[in-house]
Amino acid sequence: MTTTRVRKAILPVAGLGTRVLPAVKAIPKEMLPIVDRPVIEYAVDEAREAGIEEFIFVTARGKASIEDHFDRAPALEATLEGRGRKAELESVRNSTLTDGNVTFTRQHTPRGLGHAVWCARHAVGDEPFGVILPDDLIQAPRPCLGQLIEAYERVGGNVVAAVDVPREHTNRYGVLDVTSDDGRLAAAKGMVEKPDPEHAPSTLSIIGRYVLDPAVMRQLDRQAPGRGDEIQLTDAIAATIGDVPLHGLRFDGRRFDCGNKAGYVEAILAFALEHPETADATRALLQTYAARRAS
Ligand code: G1P
Image 1 (cartoon, protein in one colour):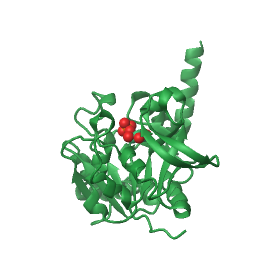
Image 2: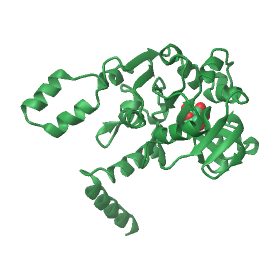
Image 3: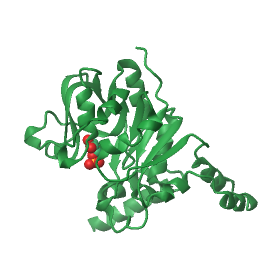
Image 4: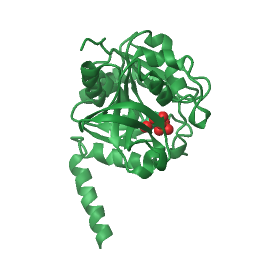
């Protein structure tokens, strides 16, 4: 299928993070560290590995340190260079985004995820785009957004990352109304934001990765508020079904919800177990704590 290349990604980072207070009272929740990188850097690295060239952050008051994090740090770099700290210097340089390939725009009022995405409309223009919700941290053999882009190149339209959740959890997610399903890719005829378990059309739920057709941005221009009186991205995507197809992709990988305490702790453990500098020590620690609990 002929599709337009996905070059741009929106990273909505305007949210408050009330589930991890007081840790995020004075810093953005996206700057919480997972081993040695802030949560937001994992999202940016995933997008880069998926071939994204332009990064559009939708920020808010109090989020300026995200902007600083992806900027050059001349004094720090000079000090590290002078001391011969090559690995650290490389890690600092790796978190710098290329001049002109990064845009920061603000969402002035918290009116929902759909509204945050709409705030990036001028930077995106009339082309397909990715969306990454950084709270959903994904550990995967291939970048999750890249898996979505591959699926999009086959089927076009809108493709969202999806997982099967227990029915009692459907009220935490956007949920797909599935028409056909090959076990990996599911076609949908509708999508509902956070339905009660008894009304959920399925248990196949959206995780924070999307490849979206420009029709969704046009729909957001006129999207009325939905659940919680917020402008829902889910509603705008659902409204384009019929004009463009919608598919949910069961991606390869594991997702951690860093917006809540237990998910954040699990993400730290999972990434510490993969990191060359911390893997052995973390494994040993886990064994020690498991033995202590058993005794
Ligand atoms: C948002 C979306 C929801 C999606 C979820 C994934 O909800 O509105 O459709 O399933 O992200 O994490 P939030 O978690 O921001 O309330």
